[in-house]
Image (cartoon, rainbow, N blue to C red):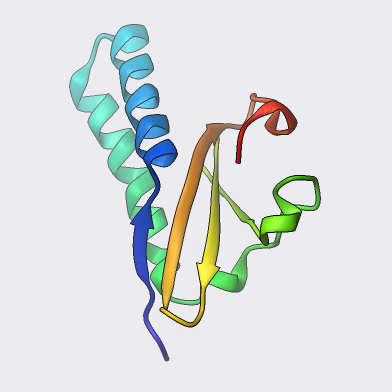
Length: 105
């Protein structure tokens, strides 16, 4: 079975930093914030095996870019798969409460 590399886009890194910042502000607990971010990243790492196990998003502009969606905790992880180079690109990590139709993919 092929193993894919995981690569984060700038948007995804910024999303994770914003989630961490929000948790630090809301909870005032850096340990919980770090554990939460680590749990998201651990689930993302699992995409290195069978990244197609999650469905493609059916709404635009995500669908046109063959963007897959995975739910982790209360967040959505959006990613594209480059089969030729065996890379999974994590494009966004967003709260389930956000309207994804108004978000730049």
